Length: 374
Image (cartoon, rainbow, N blue to C red; front, side, top):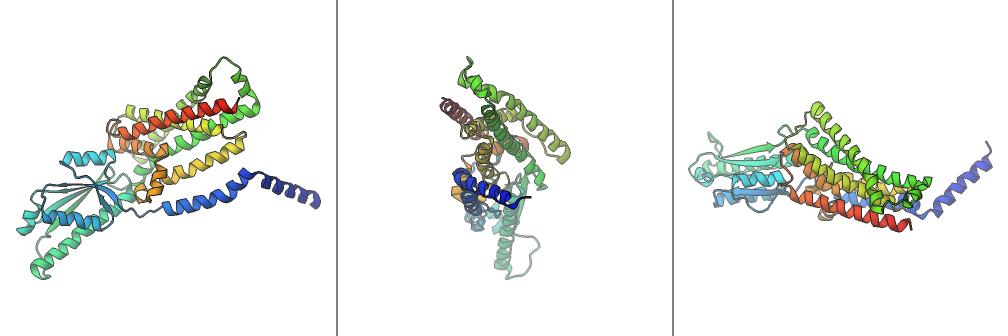
């Protein structure tokens, strides 16, 4: 091996790397920015869980209980519920992650020395978010019991506890992580894989010279783009069905909602990601540059969409950034349909967001596609 020739080759690669400003920024600046952004955004300790209250007692005692829950920092009270069904519906649709149900006899039972029952409903589809809420609710009940006992007897034990806080985990009573992860894997696979293969297909044809041949055909630009994404819609359905069936049979993930609603939501999500992949393909001239651009979308997809970490634990800027990702809304939809049994009508906001993403990405990619090939 000739050391001079080898050193010349190494030196040439470093010079070429220095001239490639895009690659140089990718390997130096982008990791630092991602470290700073995700370091502040990712927290496993869930705080300010959106909570609704159905307070039938409307007493000072019931308001004290709610205030003690808020003081833990785990609950953030939203609009009160007017009945039990509305409280459940808000958890089903994702408007709330917990509900506190206080019976009408709460204050009366406390004053008469009887046990006053309180029910706390927690969305347990995400075990990491629900476990802290469950522990906090139980801790509030224990603290109030101790205070009440000391106030009544001066510290002597009573036959029955003054307050009985009954925590009911919904949708995932056993707090199994597979129930939460498997539906999320559907969204993650559809997002990352479809974006990459769609972006690569356009660039590959450009590098091989076959894309110019398509341009001179009577096909319109929109027809070319539709022809590119339609086959991958079926690929996405195959991936989704495979994960759903294997997750149900192997991990016991329930399928409670209507499958037509799940496939309709998946169509919107698949279309949005294919449009994004086509848009990314117009930003680069080579497969390597397209892959580099696609990686910039994958990291936020994993960390800010709610796939791994609860979005409620993230600071407001990270939640705003996650709201710009189609995967954020699809995860809420797929988990709502599969685990909670709701339909698209109950989660119309998430469905509308996916419609906007699908139309916007397809429109942007078509316009950009026309400009780059002129």
